[in-house]
Length: 154
Image 1: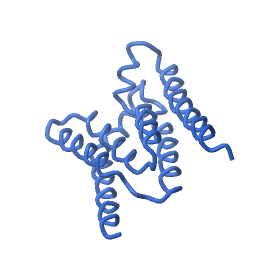
Image 2: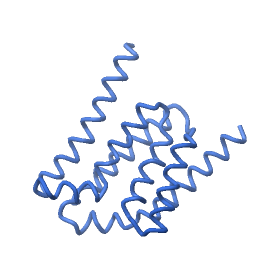
Image 3: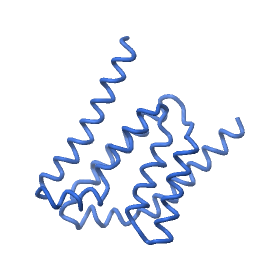
């Protein structure tokens, strides 16, 4: 029990620290045309992560937290914002109870990253980028619901 509490505390501190390192994302959401609306996508993603993680009791996975912390340290040392954002996604996904939900959480977390907007700027318009982000979020969420319904027919 004490180890679980320590891991929960470490996970909370890691989320706070990675959130602090990722605070520049707010500027991108406000000013970058290809990241417009991604804040709402991030809010929906965070709600999805919270709902699934607290539903079965908060118990983060140490390996996922460690990967997020390593990415955060790399971003701090190398001043690479995308690593901090990815670290935050991994650390948040560490709280999800099932492996398939963690993978889905990471894929859905890609939708709000500014790097995703930068990548999409080579292919689509800013308005279409918002639609792509929403489709990624909703699509992976629907796949998770389908997998859950397949496993638990009740």
